[in-house]
Length: 210
Image (cartoon, rainbow, N blue to C red; front, top):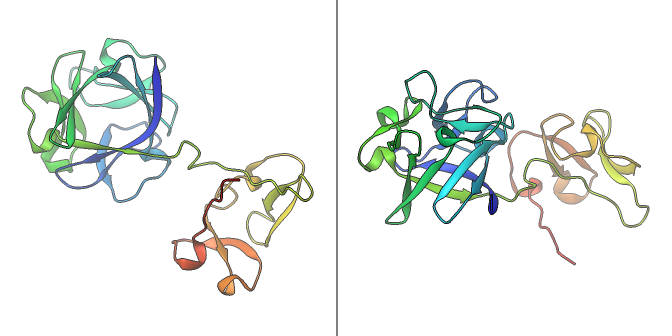
């Protein structure tokens, strides 16, 4: 593999993101409004057009050769012919064709059913866009320069954030302590704490690269 990127796939027909449903144990389906772990993939290119998709939900490669129905599911440890696809550009979107059967992948029934590699031609159900995702979007640790310790969402996120850990664990990675967003409580006048379900102005931060 020559290049690899973290991406999400967005269906043209319904504007939804493709999801490796149920931690990848069910076929891919375009039914998500936002990008989370199940909606991100590592796209690995062998050349400018041939690629494989590795799900971040379970670490498996997406395959189109499952039981003769050609539904896409992330269930393979290695990428062979049924796990590789050809990228076909199409006026700002793209289609992808299974190298196993030379069929285009479709978001069946306008996205209400699972993705399947079963189409001979490229039309709206077979059109997708690639959304590049920062590779560390799901897991980050924050280390304080002043003491060299990692920031912790203390008590599984129930208490304020504090830089007091020498090692990285679940409480020291973003959103993994309790699945909540970090907020600058009281417009930044109080301590940071991970207790929000949705992002608003208090939950937005800017990375400053030094």
